Image (cartoon, rainbow, N blue to C red):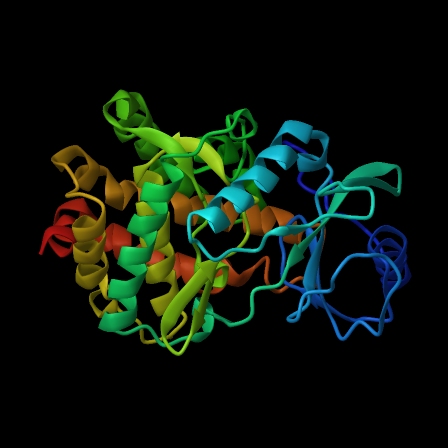
Length: 351
C-alpha cells in the first residue's frame, strides 16, 4: 500500500510566521488568522502596526502561504503562478497578486523540519466565499458566465510550469486508486474503482477529441469570492495545470452540486444546472456531443478523487475538518449521480 501519512504540509508556529513577515517584508505586529487548506498553510494578516521596509501593506491585508514540500521543489511552477496572477489582473480578472519581498522576489524558500517550503505573500481579496451563499438561479447564471469568461482568458496564457504531473488534476484521478484502501468498506472501494475505471475508458482514451489549455483546476465554492450576490474574483492558483479545457466546466459544476448536498434533504433536481450551462454556452461556446457525453463521468470522478485524497490527508491531520468537508456530502451526491445515470443527467445539461 502507498504511504498514506507522509506529511508534505508545512509545520510551523506563529513566531515563525511573524519572523518571515518582519524579516522579508518589514511587517510588524499584525493580526494572524489561519485559513483553511489541504497541503499548504495559509494565514490572513491584518492590522499591521508598523512597516519598516519600503513595502506598502495592502488595505485589506495579505495572505501568507507556506507551500507544501512537493510543489516547493518546482521553481518553474512558482514562476508560472506569479506570472499567471499578474496576467489575470491585467486581463481584468480580480485575483490575489503577489507582494514582492524586500529582495524583489515573489517567494523565498524556508527549511522547516528538514523539508523545504516556498513562502509567498498575496494581497488579500475582501469578500465572502461562494460556499457561504445560498445559490439561486441568478447566482448560478453568474457562475456559468464567470467560468466561461475565465476559460476564455486562460486560453490565451501558457507557461511551462503548468505542464506538470499534479495529483489533484482531474486527468490524474485514476492515480488515486493506489490510495483506495483509505476506505475500510469494500463497497466504497469498489464504487471508486468502477467510477475511475470508467473515467479512464470513456474520457482519457478519447482525450484526443478534447481541446487543451491552461485551466484553474479547482473552481470550488471556497475559491470564488462574492459581494452582494455578485462574483468579484477567483483565488488559489495552486491547482492550475495545462489540461483539457472542459475540465474547468465539469469541476465547477461538480462543486455546484456538492454545495447543494450540504443540505441533508438535497436533491440533484434542486441544483441550478440549467442556468449554469446556458450561461457558460452563451459566453464561451456550445458544448459538443462528446463533451456532453463525458460530463457525468467527469463529475463522478472528481468526487471520487476528492473523497480519496481528503480521506488520505486526514490520516496525518485529524484536526483539519476542512480536509474532510467533501466526505460529509460527497458520498450522498455521488450515490444520486450514479443512480440517475448519464443519460438522465445529460437531459439536465441540455434541457
